[in-house]
Image (cartoon, rainbow, N blue to C red):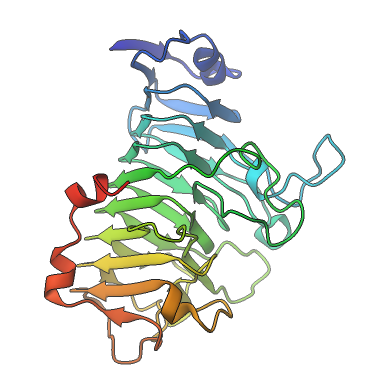
Length: 318
């Protein structure tokens, strides 16, 4: 594998990506410590972007859904990303990706990482924004409102894909992990934050899956920690709500903080969700893990059902 060093500077990461050979051969871009203040697009298969550690290497941009775009429209959710990965077999390791748009009460959706590609892996990274921090493609089949999917993949086929997130910290407030990928989260910190500057009491949703109909896996969180930053009160946040009616999210052996509401899950005004989707938990602990008051459309897995959720089966599921 070819290894190419990259130093911070004006658009140095994007220039390094653009200069890579087009044959799809495996390449690692090794980023030196520092802040890469640029909007980055990776559209090349089999490429690794490796930092010097999430506390040392940062990619930062500040686009927001409500900001104007040169085409005369707003940027919108799916053009607000700091880092776009639109390729198969890519990997991020040891870096932080930030969408720094502010103030929270005015900017709306602000994607830090837009990940679209099969066999995508993100390890030892921090992803930070507020609403819609991490988008795990594909998009749903249809928009709810015209122009809602405006962005780099709106006209592309909705390709099934597997993502893996290990030892990552993902921070946000509303729907901050969302999308249709089959995504396996292992040993991650899922952190609800209070990003408001006007004193309002925050409330939100850690996940908003849009699992395609018939896909075996949606989101699986294995031995993860659902935590809250200072300023997030007890019983104020949900584990998730379904962006589309076939959403699947399963928590296995997770630690769940007291910021999670007793009902745990919201059905986003989809009364039939209990028949179409899946919200389930097994073996979780912590002050927010009590299943006795959970929403009636969610369920506890049996030991036998939980044992069927393995990473090997997940990777063989598409």
